[in-house]
Image 1 (cartoon, rainbow, N blue to C red):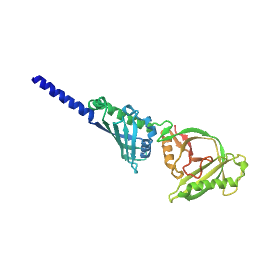
Image 2 (image 1 turned 120 degrees about the vertical axis):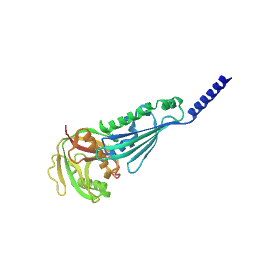
Image 3 (image 1 turned 45 degrees about the vertical axis):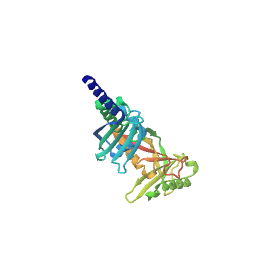
Length: 308
């Protein structure tokens, strides 16, 4: 009788434990600090580029679906929720501990919450190190994506090209920053109106450069490719001869006055690939695009030199 009572007690206890394990969520939290050899902008742009998480997601994180992303406006906090299955989630947060121009120290935390799969719950309870290893592996890959980039970095794909020798007719002006893109269109129209049509070599393209100045103004220069035979233009136009050069090319679709953020990414990419920008970058504009929109896709062309 006593043995049967003991058996019943054990059975009921195990049943209750099993039911609790099945119905109650099981969770574990993991945290680690990581030093990223890149500034805060690069680090958080890589996080916000959720379409490319597959570049560093690994282990149990593979295949999970992104549910929500919250990035604070200061760029110091990033939160996300991903789904492992229809009821289990991973809640993550990344916060900046300190940062400077070339490095960022972050605190990365993930909370795994399992609500359905008993076997996964048992693994999380008795072998939590397996989940932590996958967590740490993902962070290591995240660092590699940033610190040893191939042709991709922080949401931008880069391509090395050879730019042929060209001759430009250029026109410059200093304008208010809010009128910067309108000035680009205006200067292009002035060049085309002043140069005979048979001297214009690339009718569908034109190029621009700009520099933001401290007083909310910007210096802007626009160039149109012309025949090499053209040897003289009237003031205020100038002729610019450009030899063939090696360049990095990237595509952007943000407002024209804000592309310097992407250019900053490009300069860090060059540094990590043992190269440096040679001169100011050019922005290539396509006439086929909607030129009334300052978010029309643009190509940035940066001449570079190797430091190896």
